[in-house]
Length: 148
Image (cartoon, rainbow, N blue to C red; front, side):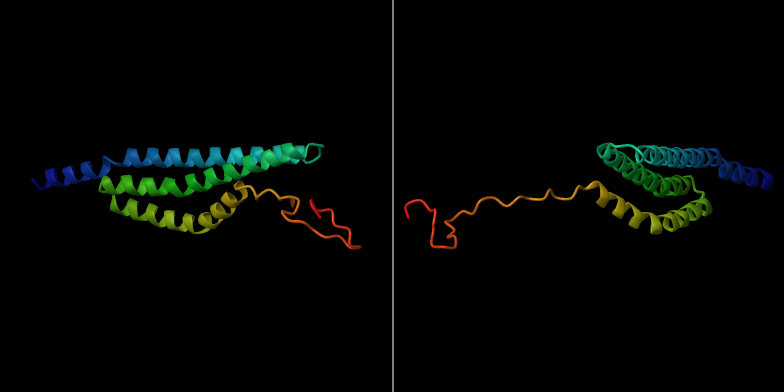
């Protein structure tokens, strides 16, 4: 009887292992893909920096910012999802480890994401001052105002 209870506990504890392992594998592959995307854009920026097309460089800069945001999101959201799934599968220690990993990754990723998102928001276009809305008197007493 004791052997059967122990066997059931061991079997129940191992049922979530492959699921958590698969999620970790997907997370690591996502990190590698996002980092590869970011590095590829960086290499493309390097080659464009020797050219004469500043518009293309600005477009690559925006794409690099998006790639960095995606990498920060994948790096932070991956362990959070793994922790949630592990907790649902009653793998509490695994959930705690990935929850701590989420916090450790989120501390530097949050400021990086905020600064990168700020780069995506274009600065306001400079406004050219228009003609004055009232009559302006010039030196010498010559006013070119209508009616006067």
